[in-house]
Length: 171
Image (cartoon, rainbow, N blue to C red; front, top):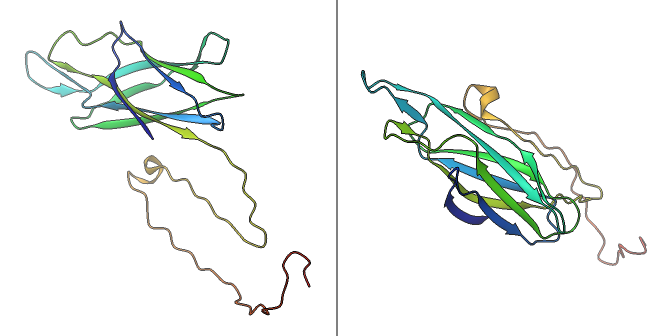
């Protein structure tokens, strides 16, 4: 994970260069310290939204929009949104995060947006001969806000291998 830690304002997009030639994608992490709008008369807090645009520039090319996340809701604590973008071909790539929503003009609106970090993703295709591999991706939104405990029963057989066995010739 590469820390960026820069606030994204409408007038000044943030650009980072990813130089890892093995990267297949990047996971961009956007942090909001709060997302609220406060009524000036009653003091009530309501939600808000922030729209961003994420662009990628391939070597020798121009910036192309690859994602347009809209973060909406209400939170008085930190919230992190992760957006995966593809990195085709050979790098380096420039990635730009731009704020579409106007910057807050009042202390009653809290939606400061920070590009906190990015992670280079390498989609490797591993082979594990004579093995079963399990991968699970869980979204807490689909299970009432929490990810449950995963339990598995694994059955196998432990086999003694002779000390004179050669795995290359299989003799």
